[in-house]
Image 1 (cartoon, rainbow, N blue to C red):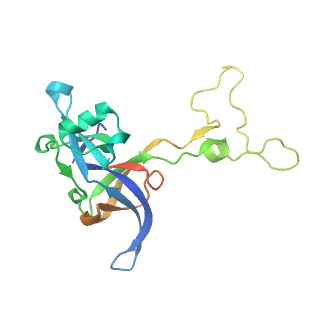
Image 2: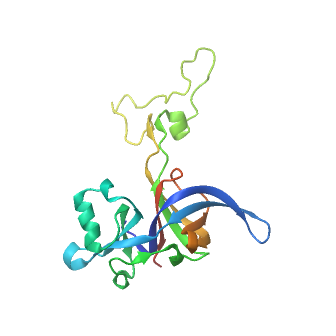
Length: 211
């Protein structure tokens, strides 16, 4: 992740629900379980050519990891972890290897970005993939849900960017400026207004961009 962040965590999408404001308004929210995350490695300009913190999330059994990863975690004196991700923290120097970062680094009212992998929908046609209108469905038109002409006669090629059938979804998506409406440190839960990419149980990166 190249963006400079004020704070960030690795987490999982639990699902969606709703909460009510004191005025009785309904707010749709996504529940994220974020952290605790361990600082596994500090990268600096002298050794790595850039500054970043490598965070790890979700403890796993040692038998599920290979020896290089186990050595990496033992060197940092942290438990074996399932997920690793790098964040370019603005205050890189104040964090130490082995430090635990929790969801209480966020506050209600913060604006955060959430990055995840969207749901995969397999091979799809142009109607579902791009919203094409298709043709008439009756009178033997033979043009129902078809992409239509895909190129001109003179260039003798299909121009780049033409919408055609293909794989839909399963792409990295970042939703920006979601409002934090709830922080529950005792349960490592974060509530953000609106939807985030991916299925329930999918990994997400949550971060607050540096001002």
